[in-house]
Amino acid sequence: MTIFCLKINEEQRIILTTDDDPIFRCRLITLFRLVNSEEAQQAYNAIAEFIYQDFTVEENQDLEIHCC
Image (cartoon, rainbow, N blue to C red):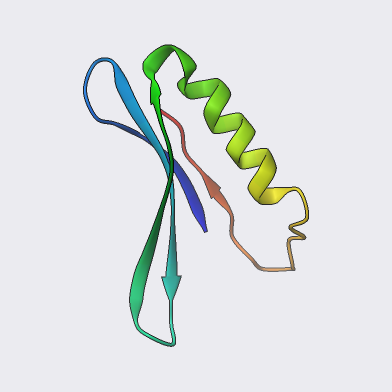
């Protein structure tokens, strides 16, 4: 799972995740929030904390976190 902060325009960002589904051979995209650019970092951090709060990283599992 990868979390992104996607720039829509100068004022707006979307916080989203992508995840590959090997069974159905597709990529899942989950849109979390549309925020003003000033609030993007705070929203990104809140969503990342929510997503990963109970997530344990197993050996050899890659995590990617990207922001604005």
